[in-house]
Image 1 (cartoon, rainbow, N blue to C red):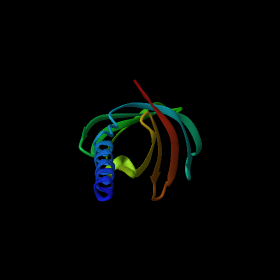
Image 2: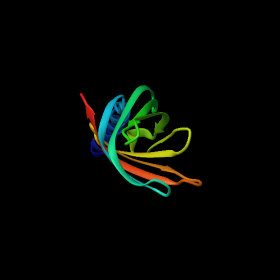
Image 3: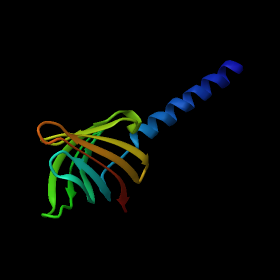
Length: 129
């Protein structure tokens, strides 16, 4: 009897973990304020809007709009995540993103470019429903 209870508990944990992993969806529009430090342009703040347009399994694509004093910039990006979205990574044509899903509607991200004009930017984004 004790073996059956332990087996049932272990099975329920596996099923709940598997269903939680399958339910992660990043699709939507996420916005927040970003702060950046760059070798050439220095410090800058502004709004970042991440739009995840498509997700297939744990892979996704979309774009990031960011506001700048000299105009808005839109960059396409591609990404993927581990089961349960514990680790989320992305890339565009120039750099790499790291993401952390804080809760179903809050996403932290940092972006880094290296080379002659290195820069780093981070923001906390909230999904619009």
